[in-house]
Length: 374
Image (cartoon, rainbow, N blue to C red; front, side, top):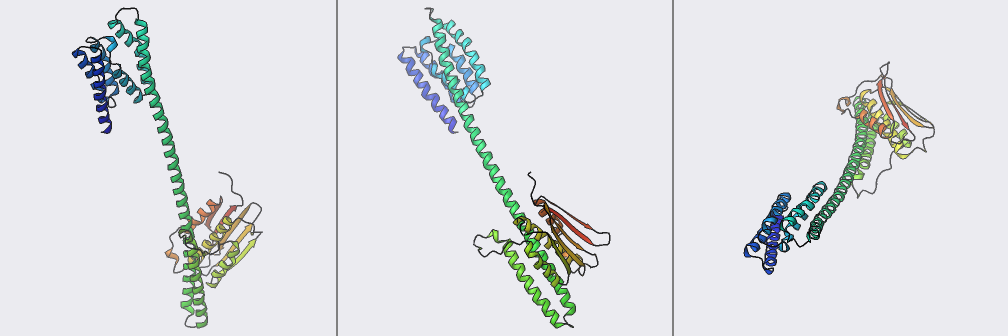
């Protein structure tokens, strides 16, 4: 709406200027009114620039029938040419520029005074009209350049937002995996210990008390681990727990043993120099593997093997298939194996989980010490 109002104002002011200029050159009243009327189409110049240019171009010879060539209202056609170039395209501007010389030649030929200055008049008129087109084209090019810069900046900003969102999503997935590992392992341990406590509570009160103490310790540790896993969501949390590592695997195995699960642990090779992220992945895979054994094969013989070589870390969590599902076996979400595979994949490795021929189950993961470049 603002552009329409501005165009109407421009047409009115320019018409008044042309009318006054024609009157001062002693043009007839008909010529004065025709000069003012020739500026009227400029009120629609931005909405229909080509149509406005056509009307003005046709109106010029009609005006010259009522006035001298020297009094031709050049401002109207100059503004129309500028508008066509500024609000069009380069090919269209070039086509109109090609039409200028024949148009001026016709006008000068029809309304020349015949004093021998036709060529000079043609060159002057073509130069003025071409200058209007050139200014319009320069403005259009500048606008296109600025628009391209803004579009590029917008794209970069959107890409940054998408990258930030991707990082947030990845962090959420990491937190979700940590929370799942902590909660699933702790709940499986507590469930197993509680089940044993129910059976030995009446006949072995001392053993039941030991199990309750173990449940207390496991639940307290679970709360600490959960607090650490969610600590990144709180800026005011300063007492975060250490990041788990291979060094903590024996304690994890001992928790499983305290729950009644027979576990053999073998750590081969030098693990102390492993990267922190790799140690966390090893710990979480072992944790989830033991959780699955306690949940789905209670009473089985489990073996945990961590072998560090010169190029990779191998993790094996197996059970002999002698156990039976526990009361918590049906409470799983099925995301444990998926989470382990995601952890292995995030470290550039692979994880395979399969049932053995003797009825046991094996989780086997290989994590490279150095990830291959993507």
